[in-house]
Amino acid sequence: MPAPLPQYSLVIPIYNEQENISELYRRVSAVMDRLDSPTELILINDGSRDKSLEMMRDLHQRDKRVCYLSLARNFGHQVAVTAGLNFARGRVVIVLDADLQDPPELIPDMIEMWRQGYQVVYAQRIKRHQESWFKRFTAYTFYRLLKSLADVNIPTDTGDFCLMDRRVVDLLNRMPERNRYIRGLRSWVGFRQTAVKFERDPRFAGEVKYTFRKSLSLAINSLVSFSRIPLRLASYLGLISAVFSILMACLILYWRLLEPNSPVTGFATIAIAVFFIGSVQLICIGILGEYIGRIYEEVKGRPLYTLAEVEGFDEPFEKTS
Ligand code: UDP
Ligand code: MG
Image (tube, rainbow, N blue to C red):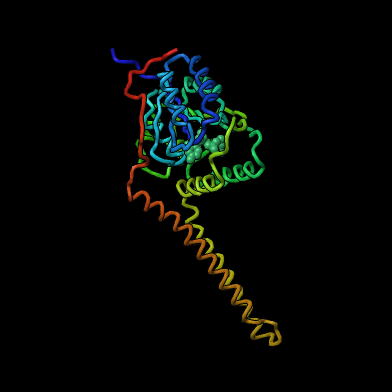
């Protein structure tokens, strides 16, 4: 008899999280024990430099429900999650962070919503505990900016913590694009989606792995992948500065012809105009560059990630308890 496939897959990306893994396993396995069907736990090592990988190997030895992938270097959170989705076998896939900011205890509620017929259940933060005002402010502004610019309706204040039905995961797996903003792609596929609200806890231990630079790059990625409005900005800026320069020309003509004692001096005006046009042009070239850079990335067609180690997927799946 072929071994049964798991019904639920939990996908957790891990980058230098040695302080969190034991507690994560304790809390997640407690939830897994309470679920009604077999569940696999997929840990993705995103090129950690600490003991995370050894700890994952150890967990796999102790509990065969734990499978793991090890990427050959740090590819970033979104790619790590994508790798996990590629390997997940469950009818339902749940993605969560390793630092316990996404409480695993919410999973049964999400599964309940799935049973009611939703294909995507995303967790929406109603409150963030102990995150700096800077992080809260930038996150707040970014999610609203994205919502107003993006072509699809990406719900505000949602992270990658979500449940997805097999149909949605298959669709995501078939998407070839390499700039993966999973929250956006997940909204793009459609189907019935709903939110469960939660309060986001502080990190259990360790440093934040999403540095300001990584967050900014994710933000730019998401805007560029889901909106073409920034491209239009160049035309708008051009129009505005054209109107502005016509007004200026009229004003200067008027002064020159009708008010011979007017204080128009050339240098300051010219210098400001040159800098103004210069910066507008540089900004527009920068925006174009963002889009062209992405075309270049797509055209190269390199694989999204490289794998150094894969364990637990070819073995018959068994629930050990
Ligand atoms: N992470 C990853 N690769 C990275 C950065 C982060 O796999 O390059 C993982 C990290 O281990 C954690 C999750 O992504 O499980 C979220 O990271 P973090 O808690 O630092 O970010 P937050 O979303 O809380 O700002
Ligand atoms: Mg976190």
